[in-house]
Length: 273
Image: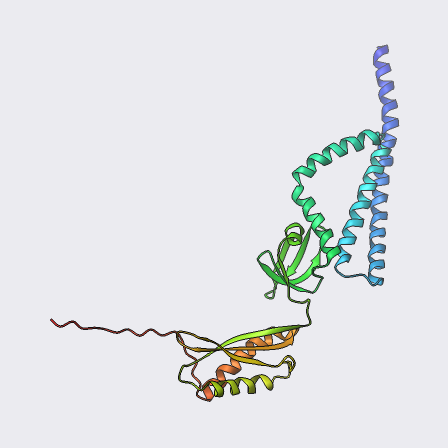
């Protein structure tokens, strides 16, 4: 009976001691999360006020938020009486194992850092990478978000994005538009060239310098191909490319220039019976 009373007394002491620690840790966690939310909001407002590259903003927000949560978690564990030295050693061993399992995730994080340092692209640029193309919508810690012209959202991991080939269509202010315009072998090349020049020179979006380029580039199977090249501001690229094709078609039809299509001549030989 005395042993039972002793065990009950010890149990009550443990409940009082560790119960208080547990309640304190829970209160600290709740208050800490509330404080962190305020800190994150304040940090976000600070970034908005400063002249910071928009590409960095979501990355910095995520990095600060994650770091503060880790510090809060360690502080709460300390309040529960967990020895931090042992915990850090265990955490290090676990981190090594998890790191090996999540090597791709760590690679994506490193890729995000490389992208933000080297800046091969920024938010708003139109890029082509990893088999996809679109405007950069956001650069996050582990991935980059693209918005395609047909309004699809593409998420590309930063690891492959930072090490693979990439085309940035927004780096230069101007782009060259190329057409290969085919005319019939019986058509007048100079007449076709003049029609093309009239169309291009009357488009205010097309630059006069460098000058418009129109030269014969190939004597193809069914057509004489005229290489036609102009320079435009990058935002005008697609409009000029597609609208000019329609103008060429209409003008060639109106002025008697043939637009040939592949043809095949079949000769039938009749053998004498």
